[in-house]
Image 1 (cartoon, rainbow, N blue to C red):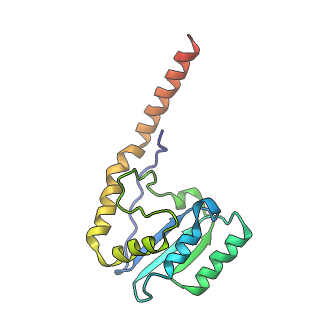
Image 2 (spheres, rainbow, N blue to C red):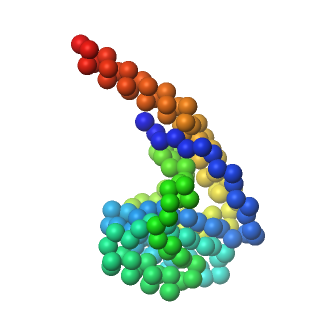
Image 3 (cartoon, one colour):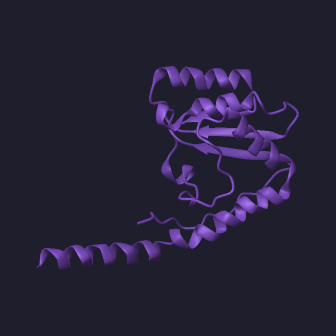
Length: 158
């Protein structure tokens, strides 16, 4: 059952800068080092900003995040935030065109560079997210939960 979320109003965009938000706690399973290494592959002149949201689950990862921000002002780790501010479309599905291989810093950097210079690619990512939006509607989640509860009650009665 996919968790639902009401659609948020889109924030106004300023200029041509690509504003990226990475949502995930700093922990080995999330591999934040891939993002930090990717920054080294992105040309300094590109208008890109990366905000990383999530609690540091290990002191060493907090130190690395802060060091990454000192090395590259385009990256900013802001620590934990409340769920309402951090939510994204999530559950992007297997056909999402923005994926890169786990641990592939150069691949991530390539995707970000491509997004900076190619509005068509950015539009494809937005369209892929829009297609998945109906899966996250509150009514759909409620219906799926009712079906699950009904099936569990039916099994318990036999």
